[in-house]
Image (cartoon, rainbow, N blue to C red; front, side, top):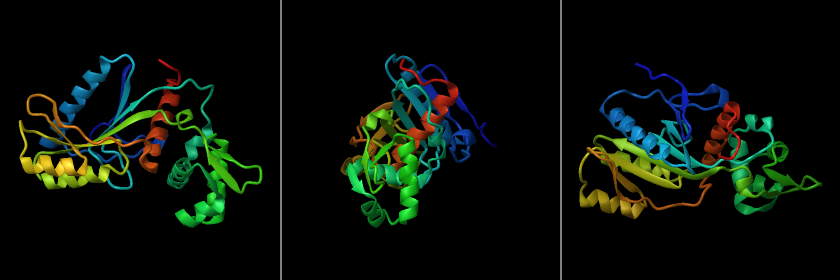
Length: 257
């Protein structure tokens, strides 16, 4: 049984329920059952939470496909920026571009040769990617085309939080393993359990890894806060930003609220 592939939005919350080819976004078809029932109840809670907030907006991605797998839920908290127009060159950005953009953003001023040596891309691939990123106003290329520097992050990155949640009815070691993988792209990472309490072993293991714990047995309670990481954590953080912006500009929601 397949879920409807769609993107649903209200004033404060967008839900990406399945793949959306128009923004280049792929998601796994969810498996219906007790685990997904728990996920849906938590999503309802998140929708209610953000619908009451005036200054914050959220996008919820259900089982998005990223390089490390399919996290159950990714909650994006974002703000909007007033921009004159959407640069259509950004529609063609791919993982190579995200990797190069992230590296430039991280290291600020670089030669093309430095990028090639570190990331392993050929000179031609690197130069073409940087020229594309420059056309998108995501980096600044030198006149000689031999050097590049970053632009101010908040001119193109609208996300303030990326919260990843792994839900499991049982198999908590697997939930922790996946939540640990999610640290790669998220500012906060959680496991979610359908119970009223959890063991000291689980609590201590998550604490050591910097993973939070959410309990959803009758109520939603965060019993352990995740460590917080500065965004973007990796190039996948940038990928979520582009999916969101492509959707917003198609929807016409590109102004401050």
